[in-house]
Image (cartoon, rainbow over all chains, first blue to last red):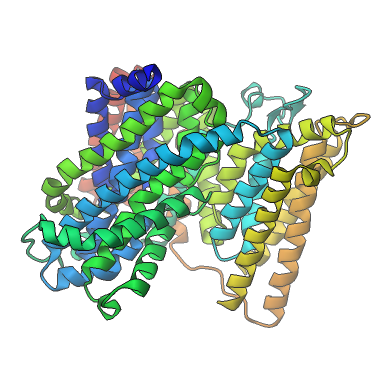
Length: 492
Length: 141
């Protein structure tokens, strides 16, 4: 109880609330602009939070994350272009509602059901996070190694069109994580005699490069961002707040979609975009009027908007309880947690329970924050769609560069950002998924150290990974996820 | 075509990684040394890349391979050169001037009108300088 109160009080600190609101507003703008993802937003804002205390910094990042996922639905509804990939499914019914002259109601449903999904996601985090962390405390080195492999294999299975390219991407991530000191003997590896590489390649600049600079280069290459011309198709916005009856009628769909969102969020690598699409499809199967789906169904819109925000609670559950990022944003949040002095994983629940409660409270407050401002600003945010592309791109580039430098005052990190940006652009060009490389970069040190520890304990025998029940189950699940993905892709 | 390029580059990279990790200590008795995991990673990349190469060649000879994506290569190259110059010149000259010049170049390269680029770059450079320099006390040059 004392731990809960401590975490709760840190979360409701006036300065933390202020930063939460700053994050919420930033997320609303970034999420509304097509092409600017929640991942990019969190990545480029992470360096700005290092000057803040953990509760203030996390309040800002959590605010950005939650509101960007919600506000991605605004441009999906108004101009048929999802602001973030999480809102792809919201275009199906959202834009159809706009064409029917019900843009206001669609925006209102986006606000209310994103909030409901978000809150239910946090409830799942509370219910599942603690038992899962308690269970994970019994893990030994063999289990931790196979857990890392399981995380990587599920991410490979759900990201991109090619499993092979996903796996290569993951192992390239492992190879980048090898730079620095060996975790058992402490010998130098791949440092090329540079002092800056002794502590390894910091993954925050890598992620800023991959998701910030890489994305901008990709957009310049294809010139894909929505322009002001698209924004002019927005119709007159009327009633925004849905009636109580409308909310009540849509609640069963919201509950089902929340469950789908949470389950998908828990799976490493399966993000809010998949959650929205699966929930939309599943709710159509059980709908009374499935023929309306895609033609302006309120149920369809509620399903997608609920699931993508519920997914965040699920992703955070895996990240906090097991140290496995549920998606790219939680991968970046791991970096932020570590910089705040807390390593995500089961030990965090035991030794830093107040920190866990603080994050849970901040997640709740972030949902309340976008609910409070979402109704008023959904309409105003469409103005940002008219911002010139060049201005957006140059803002992202300079924030990525200066932000990365500012973390350690290191010019070397600038080169890391640049090279990661080039890598991110080339990978996007070649259709190589970026998720596995990021996950492997984070899991690399954990996987290697635990694999070698397990081998030392077993006297060099690899059978230790197959004879321990949890380890064996995780290996079977890893193989199954890859196999089912291969079969599914062959069929499609 | 992209898969062919990617698999070839991955093979070269894995061979380099394998050779470099071979120089690392082997380990003692049943204790795996610093070179153990890098060699494992390199071998896996090599095996997977060879598989990808075979599949890509199969597609290439069956002429089902997709062409290399077309896009604005010149603009991307110019933006990359601009960023690289900015990174290499970090610590030399003046932060505000360097930042302004980089941003203005990006505006022009990406098709912005010169006066819009001028105003946008000036506002952004000064904002970044004030935010990071004055609020976060980052040491610039």
